[in-house]
Image 1 (tube, rainbow, N blue to C red):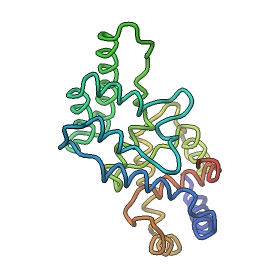
Image 2: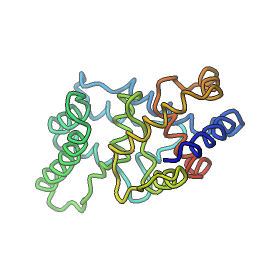
Image 3: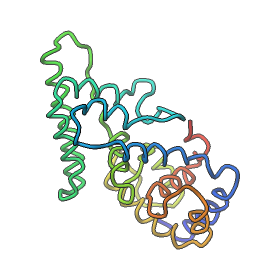
Image 4: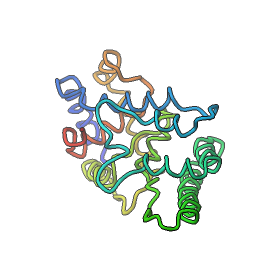
Length: 228
């Protein structure tokens, strides 16, 4: 990426954060905080816990929109095969394994859960578990906000990369690369004095990688569009 362009955009981003539009994405911190405060494996009501972990007074777009129902479908799959679903999340959140393997394994679990469900419910028309990069990023960011953040989609990510003159854009969803880019950007953001002042005077935790997500939305030109 072009460091001169990056630094110029960080200055512009700091000005936006200090403006009246600077709070546009704060609801995402609430979504992740709710997930983190509710999530536990120590419950007999795993389905109810999962349901409560994905709640918002502002928007449901991260788990429900047209032709996209990851929360609804996971609730169906948990009801069908709870222990298998529990294991899927345990492996996703196991930081002793590589993030690449955990993401691939979780998607595999989703496919297996769907197959198990359809084997029992042969008349079901469900053919998608919807456990994709977007919802997986929410799960991970909810538990480890200093390591992972929300994935805004390939179009937004690519637009940000183009703004920074990155050599290669993504030809498919690549959460591993996305997280690496976010960690790099986060490091640069924290070196800016204006950004640090914003963090001191806002709801944003100082170690939350979601700030890099906000910056990517800004770089993509979708700052106002990527909100409810």
